[in-house]
Length: 89
Ligand SMILES: [Zn+2]
Image (cartoon, rainbow, N blue to C red; front, side, top):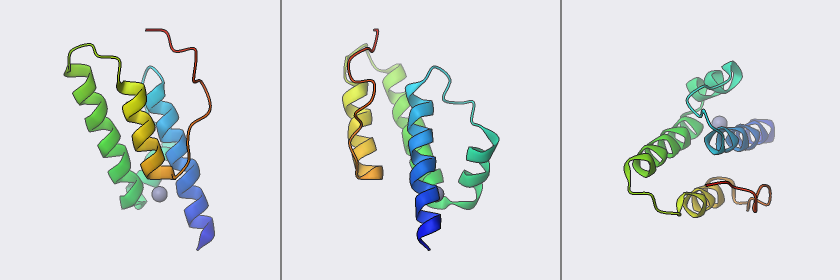
C-alpha cells in the first residue's frame, strides 16, 4: 500500500533529523513503534547508528555531513536541501 510507503518515507526523514540533532538515541515513541513493526526502517536506523558510532570514534574529520547525505540519498532517494550552510563545528 502506498500509505505504508509514505509512512516509511516520513519516518526516515524524522530518523535522519534525529541523527542530525544532538541526541539521536532519544527516539520519540511513534518512531520506536514504527521501527518495531518495520524491518526496513529498523535496518536503516541501525545503519545510521553504526555509522554515527564509527564517526564518533574516528579521528575528527569533516566528513559526517557528506556521509549522511549519501545515506540519505540512498534511503530516501532525495537530496537534503535544509541546513546546508550553518553547521557549527
Ligand atoms: Zn518503515
